[in-house]
Image (tube, rainbow, N blue to C red; front, side, top):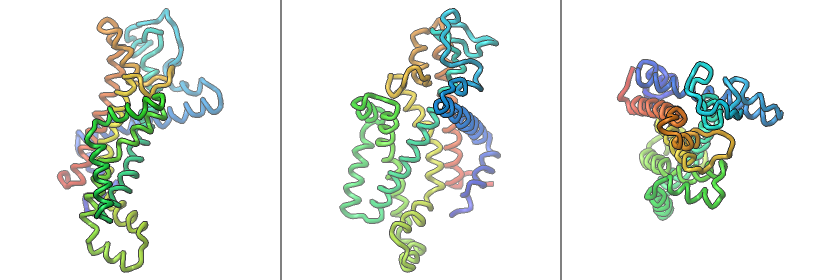
Length: 298
C-alpha cells in the first residue's frame, strides 16, 4: 500500500484542495441528511406515525392545497409549490434518502459482483477469462440506461426492479478494473509467499487481491455514485421506478417541465438539486483519483 493511501491521508488531501473540499462538503451533507431523514421515514412507516417522516421538514410533503398551487418561492415556501400546492423544498428533502439508497446499493453490489468476476477472470485465465470478458464486453457495448429499461419494464418498472436492473448492468467496469489489478499482482512475491504458507484460494482472493485494490476502486466509486444518481433520476424522469405519491427528484423535474416557462421553479429546483449532488460526487471522485495516482501529495 502506497504512502498516498489510507482514509486519513485522503481526507487531509481533500481538505487542502478547494475543489475536493467542496465535493466532500456536498457529499457529506447529502449523505448525512439522507441517513437522518431515511431513519425517520423508516420509523414513520414502522410505527405508523406519518408525522415522523416530515418532522424535520418545513411542510408536510404530501399536503395537498390547491389554493396554494404554483406559489412562487417565498419566505413561507422557499422553493415554491407545485400544481397540487405541495412544498417543493420539503419534497426534495424527503426524496433524497431514496437517491442515496439506490446509489449505495448499486455501487457496492457492482463492486462485489465485478470484484468476484474480475478476480476469477484475471487469476484463472484461459477459457474462464475469455468467457467472462466476452460477457463483460457484451454489457459494455450497450448503454446502461437502455439495458436497465429493458430489464425493469417487464418487471413492472417498480422501485425494487429499478435497483435490480441498475445492479445487473453496473458491474462490468469494476470487473475490468479487478481483472487488470489481478493480472498485475498475481505473480508478485507476496502472492507467492501467501500460496506457500497454505492460504486458501478464497482468502488469497479477498485479502491479497480484493483488499489491495480498495483505494483506487473507492476513488472511482465516489465518482460513480454521481453516475448512478443521474441514471436513476433519468429513469424517474421517464416514469420508471417511481411509486406515487412518494416524491423523486427526476419525477418532480418531469412534472415541472409541463409548467415551463411560467412556473419555472417547479422543474428548476429538483433538476438543480440533482446537478449539485452529481457535481459533488464528481469533484470528490476526481480528487480522490488524483490522490491515489499520486498527482496530489501533501
